[in-house]
Length: 159
Image 1 (cartoon, rainbow, N blue to C red):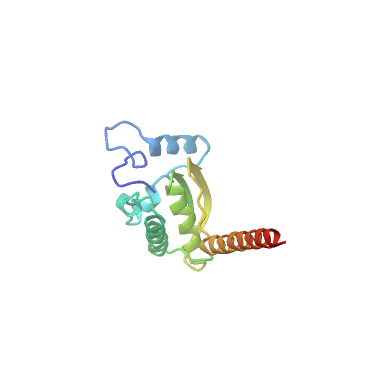
Image 2 (cartoon, rainbow, N blue to C red; image 1 turned 90 degrees about the horizontal axis):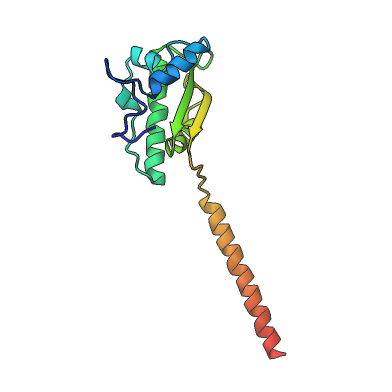
């Protein structure tokens, strides 16, 4: 998902230069897949703005954008009459931290939502993983090792 001021992911305006969506649509059409880049979403009431995000490069900003993306796709699936048995299949091309937003949105999409994530292409995504609990355990382990080393050093100086 892009920063609001970026436009590479949006379809070109009528009469404008072809952008990434048009190039992707043309490449897919050569392979027999037509009308899949933005068209299904826009035909069912979604707006391009529904897929923007602030670009706020913080964990909170990405999680917030992921929640929004998951809920907007679930809404789109309902509008399209999709169910878990006949889901809206979603293919995504994500750039930079947009890939982290999408990965988080995948985790937040309910199994019964009517949304099925099918393909994900990440372009330049710095893959992030947050494990605060593991950090605390590593810190405590390191402090324990330091305490043992200092204790052994103190015993060695006494003897």
